Image (tube, rainbow, N blue to C red):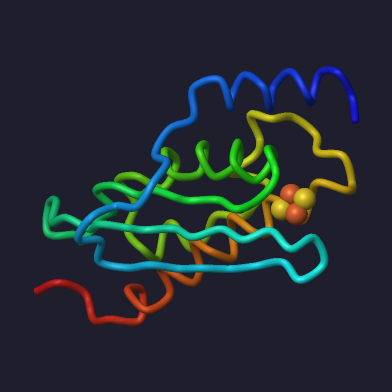
Length: 131
Ligand code: FES
């Protein structure tokens, strides 16, 4: 791994955001990776805003590597204010773009973040829009 990448991950980990269970969450998603054994859980709380149901808060808990934690921390901030449908358009590499190019061995870490957020948001996206 490059020093630049490690420095960006360390910076994200120095002040991780949105860690821990979100009480009274509207949705929860959990995904594990059988190859590395890591796991990530995401909680999402929605609110009404301008006639849209948007993500008010999101948090995560990780039993995984530093890259997954750093990417999850960034992802929780990026999905705030989006509808479930909008957030579902986002991919793991977008969540981790502030970390710079990922070493090939770390690409799956952002897939873990994407998978957990999909697991949480897909049921909400399937619901009819708020009247
Ligand atoms: Fe498996 Fe990072 S090493 S999630």
